[in-house]
Length: 182
Image 1: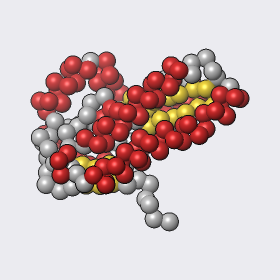
Image 2: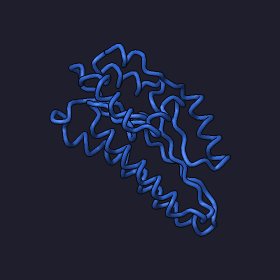
Image 3: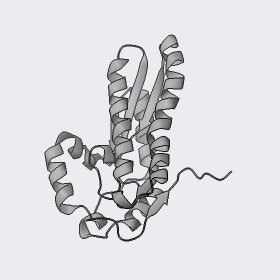
């Protein structure tokens, strides 16, 4: 779930729903399956964080916070259970060409830098996640250009402050994926 809106204007009920979906639910699911994985000394936890955990975008405060929280929990858990046989991989997708990505961009101010932002594809991301699980890699950052954000956080913060859209373009977007209908 993603909300693109000004922080002060975001409905708290929607914000809390986003935090439940993007942060609390993955933590509850991990907590439910981890004891059995630890007992059998095998298994993989795949946490889909976001590049927004490393490089937060204005207008997405709750999404950024949820994904940063999940990323921190995932990275921490990896260290906590190191050597147990259970693998934790943290995924940091940047912009990926999806309905959620398109809706998010539509809600932000359209600047030249926003239009030039490198985007990935769901198919490539899925292959990278599969490879990370198979090779027991710690994390995936995709598209690859965004690894700069992890390794040069000061430059990333400067770039975001200078070139990010100034805010929401007047329309609030809420995207729920997968669809909630049956």
